[in-house]
Image 1 (cartoon, rainbow, N blue to C red):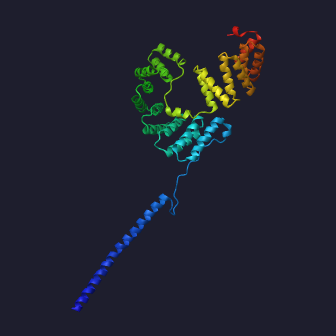
Image 2 (cartoon, rainbow, N blue to C red):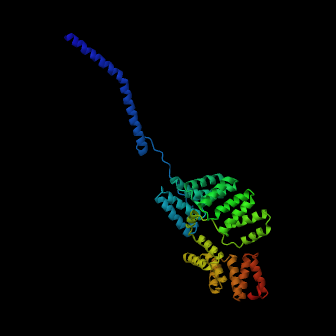
Image 3 (cartoon, rainbow, N blue to C red):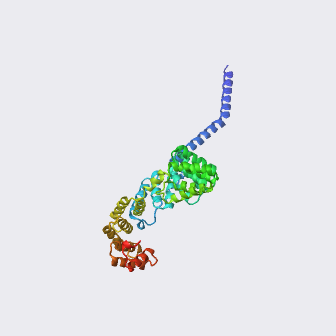
Length: 402
């Protein structure tokens, strides 16, 4: 009985040993897999946290584009640039502050610096339609049509309801002869804003390009009904009627072009937002000049006075304000500002000539002759100064001159 038991126990031990040997490769494999899995988890975590032995590659932050010498630009503009750069330095991962820096540069004509800023903003926020839109305008201006189309398509994909983006996309397609693509973009403009003339301007342009003159005339007339001051529509309609043999109507439209002021422009909130960054003195002067052309002297005067308040020795503000006052018949004020302008730039002919004309109108021929001669010394070909010199030499008075 004991011998059988011993043999039975030995058999069981051999079976267990065989079983254990047969399972050993699978156990080793499981152990190896668990080690590999743990290592993989550790590597992933290390790559996310940067605590592993391998360095983590991080895209370097782009350098902030800067004007080389801010001391050489308008002081108010320089201050605006400093503020925008400081905002980027405080929040280098904020797309909006990069975009605002781009707008500041854009508004003041630093296009390359603006483009760098917009590109950084677009990388930080690829869902914003503003930054590719600005870049598309730059691409269009330098003739990079394929790039402009790509950027504008990105713009309208991100914001399909942006009217100006759709219109610009149509215009770029039309410029390179992609007529059907242009037509579809312009149709989207009319669908978005049926009472806007710009979709009809675009569709009229495509019809004209295809020499479908009757259709072009109908579409362009519709645009003029909605806004008669769009120069593009008036000119193209004149050319359309000329092609249709309606010469008189064509000439009427062409004659009216010179009287169409101010010109209607496409409403573009992003462009307006960018232009609001312009607060340097020279842009204010440009604004005042435009107001004068529009027959708004009071508004222009306020701007000139504001510029002089900031910079009492701003030549152009004094000169232009003197001319403005002279035309308004405010001779005493005009004289004061023109004399200041001549003192600021004694070797510039224009303020001497305008001061000479003011003296002439004020019946002060000797002072007028002195300033006229000085203007001619500086610019002997100055036609107005030559005429004034002849009038003074002949002893003419303001009333007897034309």
